[in-house]
Length: 124
Image 1 (cartoon, rainbow, N blue to C red):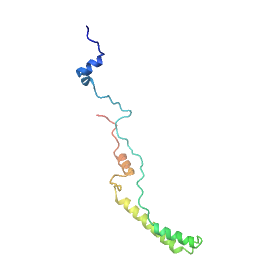
Image 2: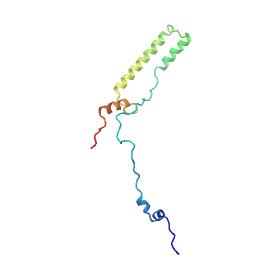
Image 3: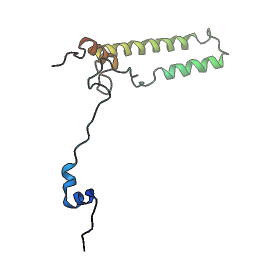
Image 4: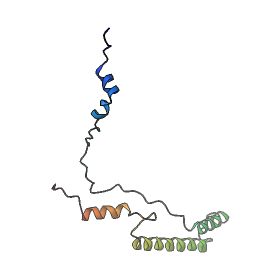
C-alpha cells in the first residue's frame, strides 16, 4: 500500500522548514522618511481663568443698577485693572519661558528652529 501524498505545505509544516522560509515583510514607505520643516500649530492648553471674582462683582452691580455704567464705574475699573495685570503677567511669562507648562517646546518655537535649521536635501 502506498503512503498518502500530502500537499507541500504540510510536509514543510511537519518538518519545521516553514520557519526557515518565513521572512519579515518588506515595508515600503509611502513618503520619504525625513522630518518635515514645520509642525502643526497646536493650541497650548488653556490656563486658569483670571479675574472671575471682579467680573462677577461687576455683573452683579450691573444687574442691581439696570446696566448703568456710571453707577458701577468703580467695579468696572477694578475689573479692567485686573485684566491688564493678568495680561501683563502672561506676556512676561511667555517671554521668559522657552518651554510650555508640560516641559515641551511650543509649536511656534519648534517651527522657528526648523526654519533656522531645515532638513538637508542632500543625501550622502
